[in-house]
Image 1 (cartoon, rainbow, N blue to C red):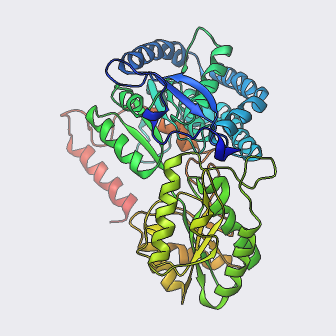
Image 2 (cartoon, rainbow, N blue to C red):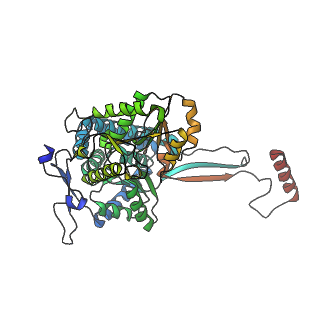
Image 3 (tube, helix red, strand yellow):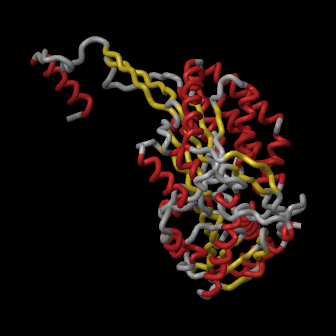
Length: 500
């Protein structure tokens, strides 16, 4: 049983078995959060190891960037097949390091494989040289293509240890870059597996490498003067990575996670909305980087919605077996955050509808549904950390907009209504970059880290424009040869074109 098994460490440094003379850990131990048993031991790599990895990556990138799109496509599709054939092993590894049910882990791996397949097949059409049109530049022809940046660093999270980093790894490699991947200290085995799967395919060309370790390793990677860093994780972690990359002016892509809000209008299908709200709040024990933190429900349907949501939540059961709805908290420190947030909500006048503080039974947290939680409570102002759903009533949709927009940072909003045509006007009033209709945001689909997005390929490329001049321009630009006749012709063309 998990209660009697070895407890998991709460900090990366405590997960280390051995230490160097300076006191820095040299071995990182990964634990199964369901049982507390050891899942594996991995090196804590420092600046020296990072330097060697980057040097090796730069040599491999020269080969990788020199081959054409079609050759890279063949290699990436071969790698996809290696990953796909190892799905069962990878799913077991994800489950053992995160505590996710196997079904959730299998879905994550499947989406990652699909994304790898997509970027391999679409890199050429997205990044190859093309000729944009334009009337005014008819005597000036130009083309735009995209070239690799060089070596990309990827910092992966523990909540989606395959899909989240694969979004960047696959796109970066398809664009012709080499990648140095630093997985979370909680899921080093998953990162090592992905890098090994590439190494088995192309042992002499380490286009993808993994560096394992704790926060010191991540900091060393940020200081390694790579051509770009990609980070997926918490807003607090994003601030730290941004500060580190700023020291070396390293370009950075940040995908901060965070659960959002749901708005239930009077005409919504309440059963569907309630089921979606509970899933959005409690999937993967509420540790997903997107989903639902709070539901704002129109007053006239508040009571029936709350009853339906409570009923759905009561059916869920956390555990380690195949029938469990979700698994344990992956990181022990998150449990204390949940405890503090629930206590703060209740202290400030919130009401527990399902569960309460006694639902927190480490390493598991049973479903908790709260209502009438004040907006100043840390349960709403802080980052959601566990299987907790907050349901608050609003007198009108105007009030719902005010509450959503009161958040310090933009967050995704799910709107449930039968009048789909009205959503656009409602969404225009929200301070958010994502609105889903009758569905909650799902990571990699319509939440952070969207897959099958051409922009992810361009993020890891530099645009190269080639401009060619054909004949003379009407004004004779580019020389000091400005004849009055050419200037009169240019003026006439300008008036004709713009009707002035």
